[in-house]
Length: 579
Image (cartoon, rainbow, N blue to C red; front, side):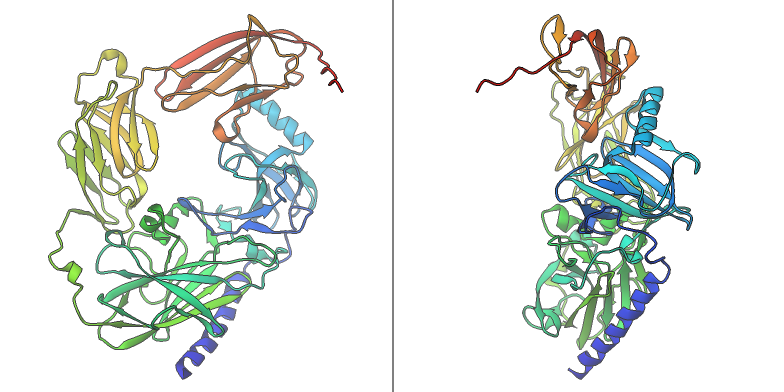
């Protein structure tokens, strides 16, 4: 008990020191709330997402769109983007202190900028667009209206996505380190502890989970306070979340430290991340456990192939060697950006016995982190770039020779789809049937697992080649079926007088590659938010009268469909409803 009290005092002082280290570098009170409503978060920086960390704050807009968005500080609009997914419509503002701010999922920009962007879309004949600006074009003042909030791009509900960026390096910085007006006096919540046998890959096992219990003195294990293990090389992971005051959202934690016998071993801190680094989130979590329906477990050790930015090694990589059968103390401290912290204390003991499950274990070929490697089978190869894996990957292979009508190759199932890859692998498959000449430039390769992804394939001699970023089942097909597209109405000359827009939903047996619409021979701006529907809202580019509308759609294999319609628009007054 005396030791635990001393440790708690040490952890308290360390927390204050860590907070001062991570906040003193950032200007406080420089940025304002970009909305005029109280700042409440539905997601914070470093929150765990599919294949990435969340790189900013998601600010609530009361489940509504079109709140006015304001510049967080003086600066100028440096960049805008319009994307079907990702941020949707977004603005980046550069500031004089070497920082930039990003505002995402917007509906419309301020009028002068909105008009300029639309003009450029017509000039470039593309709705999706990225534009850079000089500081003289669109200067803004702190608190100046810049856009309306929305739900565009990859957003699943109305909110404002807000980022703070190091302008020079483009690293995303944790906005909560800048003293934004987010109230938080709630310490993180610790839910589960996971233990791993690190004499083997984390991908060859399931975590040993222990539920945690909150007490007045901190967190403890729900059962015995001494974990007894068969493994003499171990590591830990934690399930935890954080809340801010007045918000029910379970957000991500900021930092965690691991102590063994009173000495700090390793810590991770989510203070700055580059988009080129965000995929390393898959090494930070137990990816396999999450993929198979489990919870997010954040490793308190650094994987051998993890070159990400969040771990700060103090003494090794976080793997603990138990060289005796004595009882050893372990403490894990979890912290948020406001300095609120929660501590888990327990003990661990190695029982000195070999894990009976390890005896006689068969040895399969393993793919190593940090090395070039490949899997080669008759008629199939999968080549991996250096830095593809985070830990050793056991391999397996299965071939299914059943061919459907347009299948050109057997289906090749490789390894475990729940094991992550950091880089794409090159897949080469030899056809199992003669490929007609007319099919040779219409070939796609699919990867199936939980879902299906498709790539346009190319020829590498007599082999069909494509690249994928996951394990799974790979097969090549001929795609000679063109996409389809709906009609906007009926008749030889469609009457669209009562309509406010034209909507198309192209469909294909694989994926749509491009969409182009022309009104009376000129490109017409259809929006494609979220990548499914193409919508044109009538404006002054389509005056009253009779018009020709032509639409061409292409799929990823290069098959196309072109359709032409005539329609008319006339002044329209809705009929009054009868009482």
